[in-house]
Length: 136
Image (cartoon, rainbow, N blue to C red; front, side):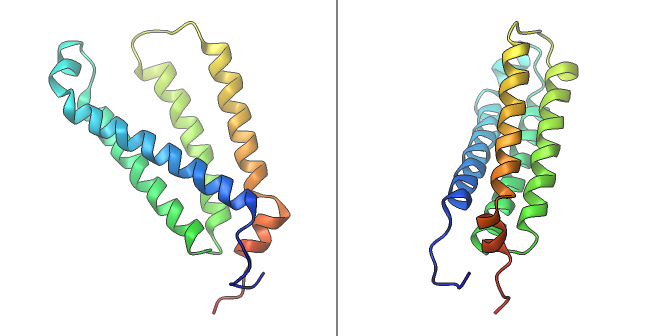
């Protein structure tokens, strides 16, 4: 795939999804700072929320850069980070959050389907061809 060819729709969807998750985590980090006192009063850990929100937002920005620059390791990096994010999400939900929401089944199905779609999209032949460009 030459440099002047358009980006495949699968890569565009992937990039938008990564940007959405990045933005969501940036909002978590900002929300922790903006609501520090309230979180402390309700015995939530604002430091943890700030650190994880900011950390995942920075990782997301790095992933967006790998997609934008068509880095050869973008596929592996996105797969690795998506699996790590899935594991972190469930560890956070099961072991860190104090309340136990009633929507575990929905969350399990939805997050697993999203992970599968993400991994399938990044592994599509059009996406692989896009990232396997000649280094110029």
